[in-house]
Image (tube, rainbow, N blue to C red; front, side, top):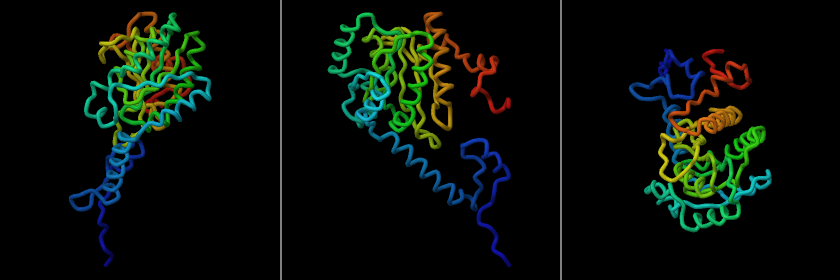
Length: 268
């Protein structure tokens, strides 16, 4: 008589084709099947590695310069990764040397810029390494169509979201965009986040920013993320604000216009 299978399949297993979420994994007795348990442990290890991975700032700067971007190297007040993870407040402000570097640059460019883009490691340097450059190229392409001026790309080690406001204020920028690695999930260790602020200055809160998240190959595409950002920039300049009072309607507008690469699989 053949042995009974040790793993009992879940009748909803076909739904896993629609989502990377861990659903309908089946069971072995009262526990998860061995394959599912090992996959979970592997994903957890990837997430932990992403948090502690060091961003190669020099390599990223060379890639940016090869594409025609100018760069500035900066550092937050968090001296190392350990301090950065334990003291979030230090990751939200520049160290003295970086602040002086920006002051000197601003004196030489008194007119300021329409947009400053800050790239920081955040909680996933892996996300920055994989996605920052291709996203930046899409943003620059669409910016030129509107005639906005772009300042040097500021590369920050051990930086958090709010640090972008200080950078934008010191460089007299009309708007600032912060690109950084988001907190890794168990299915997305390389998710890039984008935070947009109009009239940046120290003291801005999360309510003053607009966030576009999950930018990666398996999530929000580079083209759509850039499209949504440019829509926010245009509306922010028209209304002179950003944050919770500025709604992101770019995706809805694109659906009405029939633009490619924009949609919802539920409407297909």
